[in-house]
Length: 294
Ligand SMILES: C[S@@+](CC[C@H](N)C(=O)[O-])C[C@H]1O[C@@H](n2cnc3c(N)ncnc32)[C@H](O)[C@@H]1O
Image 1 (cartoon, rainbow, N blue to C red):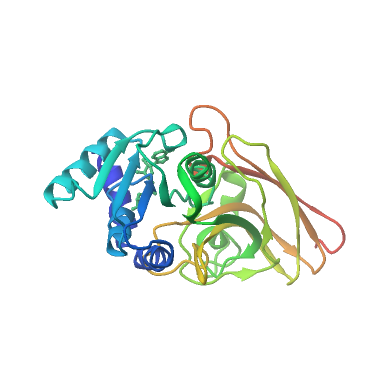
Image 2 (spheres, helix red, strand yellow):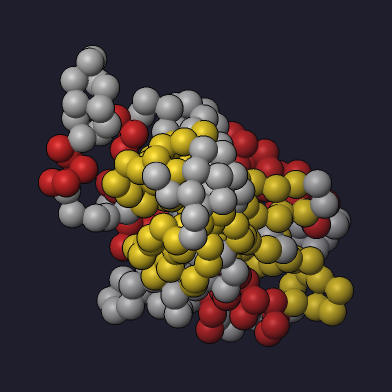
């Protein structure tokens, strides 16, 4: 198992709000003796939660052969052979020995859609879920918003760092997405706007962000919210202690903006080998339109 992958799974398993949210969702979704499919099972955290809530059997589907070996070792070490079956496959084409009552997945990227969770879950549910079966999560939404940082991140490259101008940096870096864990809540200059229909390798999404608070525009952020079950949602914005997902940030030249200025945005998923799986490969075209730009 490569060290990067170990680190990722450590961070996911240690993210308590994530684990708590899935625990609460599976408590609602899983009934005694249910058959569950864990899509992208990794180190089996969600399979274990399903067992905790009474699942009779879990099919743990994982595409990465290194993680399959890890999952099989965990099954062996815990004598779970009769309760968890590890299946090495891409979930979108997996064949299972029987239908399931519940499909669960956590394939959430920093921006949201990078691993096409809803596509994979939908494909498994269409083929393998019994009528009336439950799916966790029920939906994933990505929202974009215009922000002004509070003395951190890209907001530092302005006109007052220890009394000195640092704005030269803004001219000297190539435009690229950043991943940021917020230590302080930024000012939201616009209402967040839903970017519907994003999928890796899919067409760009276009929309407008209307400035509702005057300030200095530093960046456009992108973050996800997942609907796991009744009253159970999970989001990576605002950042919370232990959150394993950073917020996607598209830095722009610091610009004073007035109320009713509009920012036109077009969010692109890369095509090709990595096909949008990496958040920092996604990019934004944006420009100010309308009245009120300083
Ligand atoms: C974010 S991790 C989640 C692991 C585990 N379910 C958890 O919640 O701790 C996503 C896992 O899904 C696997 N994965 C991603 N896409 C997949 C697919 N289409 N089919 C099967 N596994 C997939 C990855 O290899 C990775 O192990």
